[in-house]
Image (cartoon, rainbow, N blue to C red; front, side, top):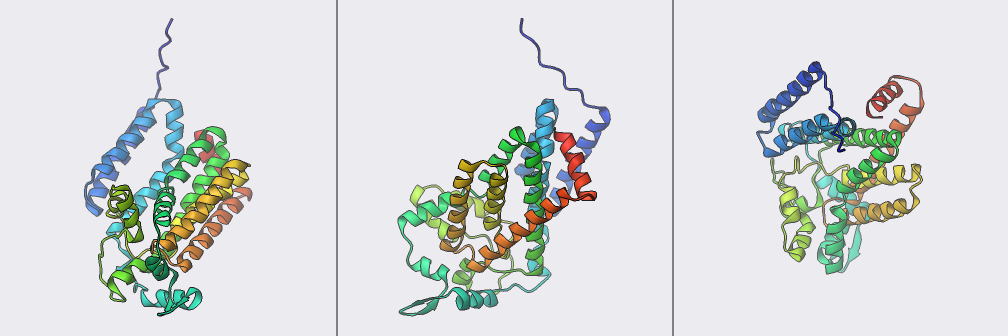
Length: 311
């Protein structure tokens, strides 16, 4: 006999709340950043998984932390940081050259400028592959943790969110241009400058597919180079990989982490200073979450209540 799938009961009030949230999100998104098909896809995924089964409901509830991050990141387009504070272009460039400058026959150059002149095919290929790991690796690791260790999953998700919020705050306190911007526009400030692939264009040319061209066309803000969240994410992944005692995976995470750090500089997307700031940002966020969870208080109560919903 074939057993039918159990009926998933959802209270009418819950249906009403999720529907209102979905509609409010679409309306607010249309007002702030304009309508995009990505928004409908997000709503379809969330509602589809929420109502499909008890397991998928817990899964999407747990991953709502990542969804909130994505929405905030997308909404940054409506409030570009350069309208609130001066963008740092020459200051950061000069500091990078002073601290990490490389002496050449033509003078002192930044590491970005050096690699722009001395790039090679293997480096172009590897930098693109490492950069493609930026978001997929954290999400895949989070998915694995959800099914194997939900307490660690929630710590990881909260650390990911907190690190991003710290990074976003710094973006507005210290708007900064990336290295490729100086290479393209020198020290002139040009508002609403579109995203640029930088050295990653060489990866697109090698594989014959505009992978990074399409990704950076959707960027929220060019003047958000400091700190490098590209450099923060792999630190979070490695920490929780080690905390969960996934030793083999941790070795892979460490290689990816170092690869992303090097690629950020090699492709002129970040200065070494940006990478160091991203590492500090990750350490700060992880520390806040770990201390918050271990100590009695509102954060630990929030952690316990959220964990209860996804177990």
